[in-house]
Image (cartoon, rainbow, N blue to C red; front, side):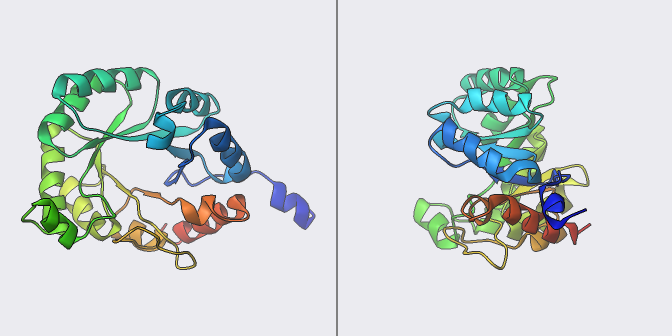
Amino acid sequence: MAAAALADAPVIADKRLIVPLDVPSAEEARAMVAAIGSAVSFYKVGLELFATDGMALARELKAQGKQVFLDWKLHDIGTTVQRAATVIAQAGCDFLTVHGEPQVMASAVRGRGASGLKILAVTVLTSLNDDDLHEMGYPHSTRALAERRIHQAIAAGCDGVISSPREAEMARALGGRDFLVVTPGVRPDWSARNDQARAATPLEALKAGASHIVCGRPITGANDPHAAALRVAAEMAQAG
């Protein structure tokens, strides 16, 4: 088979790789999904798209056979979170984030009911460091606060957590084999770390215990997003 044909051949995407569609319009998101092609099967829809066509795009991606992670970090009174989780579950989405507070987490778990929606608690945002937490009034280090919230997420019935690569090993140890540990702030060695204060490479994150990684700008900002995604997936494959 010619080299060009090999390059165009469909690939089996690594389902552990999640690419964020951090763009302001559904049209731009669709263009990015098309550019990445078969190299990725799991996409994150965040707050930019939430403000426009987020749910419509999520349903569209599901219809294409993609997995969808709604990174909306719900944080409201329990009844509101529960009702929102119910609506999102009915759309068939796969992952939903909520802030790691006991009432919020328990309400989201109730709201998703018997659906396949996985509720993930945000422990500590990966852009924050210990100094940031102290400025916000928390007496804990990022690691101590993450540990506290992992325990609370387990108690609330969450399926997993969003955790810095640096806390992934702890999350895996506390949550067990089937606990979802989704790590944003993942940056290959060949890319800039940007605003991620506690980043790691894809291989480091998976070896530490991550079940999934979120890798954005190294892929979406590349001249060839398809090739960049394959490069990240090749590194992930080294972890088994």
